[in-house]
Amino acid sequence: MFDVVAKGFRDVRNRFEGKREITEENIDDALKDIRMAMLEADVNFRIAKKFIKQVKEKAIGEVVKVKAKANEKVEVTPGDHFVKICHDELEGLLGPVDTSIVFSNPRLGPTKIMMVGLQGSGKTTTTGKLAKYLMEREGKRPLLVGADVYRPAAIEQLRQLAERIDVPVHAREGADPVEVCKEALKIAEDKDRDIILFDTAGRLAVDDVLMEELEQIIDTTKPENIFLVADAMIGQDAVNTAKEFNDRLEVDGFIMTKLDGDARGGAALSIKEVTGKPIKFIGVGEKLDDLEEFRPEGLANRILGFGDVMGLMDRFERTLSDEEAQRAEKDAMRMLSGEFDFNDFYNQLEQISKMGSMSELMEMMPFFGGGLPDDVAVDDSELGKIRAIIQSMTDKEKTNPDLLTKQPNRVRRIAKGSGSEQEKVEQVIQQFNMMRGMMQQFSNMGGGFLNKIPGF
Ligand code: GDP
Image (cartoon, rainbow, N blue to C red; front, side, top):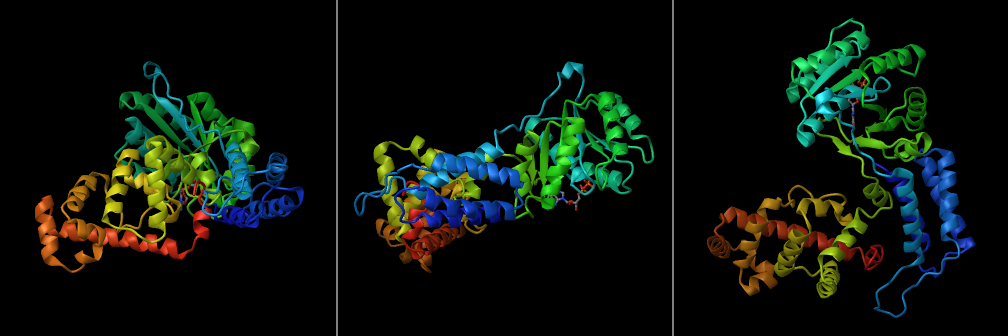
């Protein structure tokens, strides 16, 4: 998702290469590129215009420090600075974060969530996903209500989803949806359910009959939360639909679906600015687990093409002392120039375990493009085992890892010393080799790569 805008920002950053200052002349072309990228990504044109204006106002006239001497760390280049301004503006456009769900006082009855949206937007699927999320994250006991009595398969689809997550459904084919929703309030109490999700009817377009029906359901059930499910793939149409629904029903927030298939992402970038309501969750696939809380900070970085690198740098700063940070930076430079041995691998594991979960961190590293390949992925609980294996290597083996390639005797000795299976040792060696291979690939990408990472 967001590939199109991300590419636009990357091109713009390259424009600033070697420039010392942001001036009226050099910024105009850059802003034109951004405008094009935003429109191509199907961002609402008024929003693109406003965005450009704000970035321009903030950026012009800024003289920024550039590299003073050869070898000295680049502080902030005009390109970095420009990206930072865009980053802040993007966050403003997408945020602030509000993924809250309003829960009722349990003594007063179950919480009610009403799902609304056009047919095909992913409403029924998302109802199932959200129920699963609420069970797992909030320990809730949901009841699903099939109030889409018009789409023939909707109730059956809801029943199948409910069966997979083992929750009850209330629905009556052909019945009045308002009645069905009303009955559900009583049924939830009888079945000791503390949250009700109403899967309401959709249409191909917004129409009065549908809106009246939804208003009646709202009057009858008084939901604490009304979430509009919008299909990101339909771009600006999703934003227009959101606006129409919101004008009439006052929704509390949006769930943008199919962001996994939408390379443009313009709807997600426009919806909050157009409606004033936040995106609560995003759908990133067809499976029941493919629902994520919406986190604009991460997204702004991803759009700018840095993975979550800024967050990663912040964490580095918070976790390491100055001296450690300097050493870590030196190590990082050395590793990114292609040198990488088992001591580095071990130190990386140590630092990573200090900072948080390995998988989480790897997802933030831009060079891994949002996660490690499966065969390199390291389970957090395995960190201890890997440490023991490395500690059981001789110094020579650690600094010259090729000594371990196809050496069953050495592997056997290490397995014994660390209390692991030989297979496990082989696997760690393989993981190490994969990682070293990746490091070497980065180094082959040339020095230009490092300049693209803030802080290097
Ligand atoms: P409804 O008519 O609004 O209830 O829509 P459905 O729940 O039946 O979904 C329509 C189609 O979109 C189905 O094929 C879903 O599997 C698919 N879908 C829903 N959410 C997502 C998503 O986040 N990503 C992808 N790729 N497909 C989705």
